[in-house]
Image (cartoon, rainbow, N blue to C red; front, top):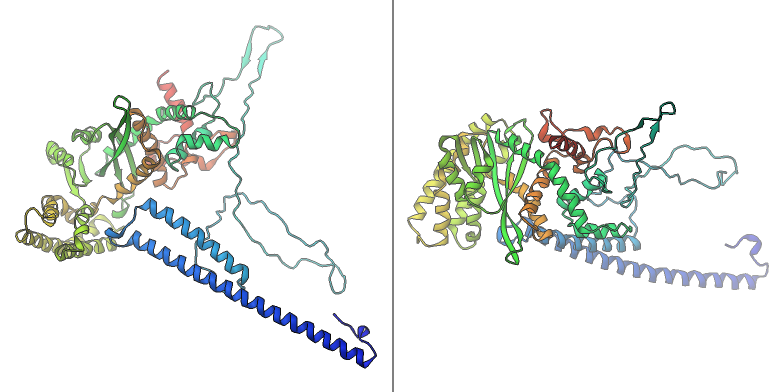
Length: 538
């Protein structure tokens, strides 16, 4: 920057200096204009790319929430969305690099996550090196501060717990050697702590990471563990935890109303050199939609087949309302039990029968419209007391259901008995008594979505693991999945529940929370379960 002392006294020299400065300013202005044009082009390209990616995301959302014929597989949808959203973040970064967002700009509406209060805070202070006033060189004093929090992570870190047990002898008699007993272990003589076994279980059954992939993850830190070793740990843990699954099932059998469903579980069949189809049965309870105070629960049981006697064996002395899909085994079960068991069928399954026909059938479209009216009423009464739900249904839903039955019967007489539409109508009318049972009982839900939501984690684990290695493996799958899913239903971190309270010899109050399904005074951890069952069989 020129000062007065730099200006020449000679007029010609002064004129030459002014002209030179003018030329430099003109060049800088031209360069700035070129740079601005380049930034505008880059920003425009980024805006176009963001708009394109957002349109792709909207298309994905239409596939997710649109009509059934347009829907994608849920897992494929998530994978596709991840890739598009990654590209969208790249485009936003490119735009902000050329045109930084000012403080006055509205922030983008997005879920940036929250930072829970229980997380450890590690502070770092970014301070001035020179605390002298830049004007008068006097000392500065603090008048405030800006605080920003960011979420950090420490990658999975392994450590070795060394247990020392001193031995003591008596100098007087030299006959007694005293030593504290060794703590109980899940794997006697093995190297894993309960925390490591819990991590393996949660990774496999909650996060759907197969054991061979976990072994690869551990190998990156030079922890060489065979997949068979991890499998042995899981099998031993399942043996200790099995009584808890059985106790869960006992608790469910005492309920007034249950949901039941089943899904396939491919199992390796070495004798034939291929897989066979086993079944994972799910039995669930959730009284929250009708104002009930009981905790939601679910139990899984593996069976080698789908025979009708399976639910009969699983349910034991259960008496009450069973909400199910249209599988004939449940109907046979109800006939065998007579007045002890009432079936409530699922309107969601009825609705699905007409989805594929709606595009070409006005009758199917009309049926879907009427069923949607029932669901609109359910949205309004969900969470109300059972009696209030019953009154609302009697007043508003009954007339819809009665008119729908007349409509179905009338259309069935007008169409070919062999058509798909007739097949869908017969599916509904043949189960009509169970479908309308919800009107006179406010405890009953309109569908079996409660248990179907609990089935989905099993389906994802099945997709990643491909098949169980044996019938016993399928049963272990059911045992551990039961406990982990109940933790999830109760908003409990399954790692926290499985790890014992005595790790590190320090009290951990949050680990003492009982499992939601065992609120009536019975709870345990994996560590405590091992001690209880070892005592049981000693």
